Amino acid sequence: MEIFFLGVGEACDTAHGNSSSLITTGNGLRILLDCGFSVPHQYFRIVEQPEQLDIIWISHFHGDHFLGLPLLFLRLWQLGRTRPLTIIGQKGIESKVKTVLDLAYPTFERKLSFSFDFHVLHAQSSISVAGLQWSAALTQHSQYNLGLLLEDGSSRLYYSGDGRAGRHARELIQGADFVIHESFSMVDTFPYHGSVTSTLQLAEELDVGRMALVHLDHELRRNELPAIEAMIQTVPHAFLPVAGNRITF
Ligand SMILES: [Zn+2]
Ligand SMILES: [Zn+2]
Image 1: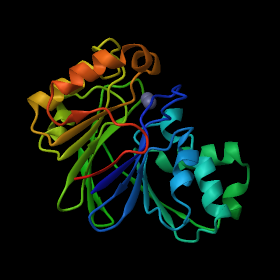
Image 2: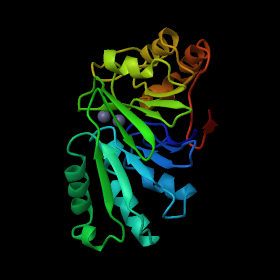
Image 3: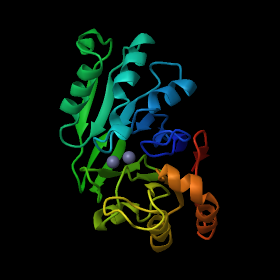
Image 4: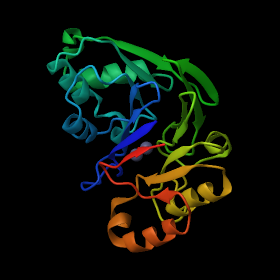
């Protein structure tokens, strides 16, 4: 698989954008992991072909993870997309997506030149979509958030969305080749967020390949970057990506 980091920040990070990645699987499928406020601009800076995107995964219904969808759809329509777009997320995904589209651009859904193909993934379960295995675990977050394990037959990628990893998320992380994990604070301070410290602990305790720390509080990143980098350097294979980084594993 290949990961292109479109953004690595939290909701209010003006420098690093909302956390989102564009994945290319071993069989050439293109998957967008979350689509927050700032993501469409980042996405269309690098992708101009409207048919290139196959699937969107939405981890939860916080704005920095899904409120970029109306603009993404608008631009795909402008560019002339006709192929159905697959969207996967938790229960309620279809009504949420259609509601925000209607709020942003009323009656626009009727004009859309492409249709949606929705799939619901429940916590602690797996589905097969487009020849890929999708497994989800509930994380500890203030909204119902699903951590995702994506398998394409040769590689295993885990993406946390938001929230601290509990027992079920740890089971998915165990053995993953690549982990993208939110790390909002320096140590576990907020009950519904992970931290740099606890994410690095996951990397040490579980058998993972590489670990990317994203979704850091923008003030923490600005004020404590040298200390954070020093902590990350002590853990082999852990790193702090920035937007524009492209990793193949
Ligand atoms: Zn978030
Ligand atoms: Zn959130």
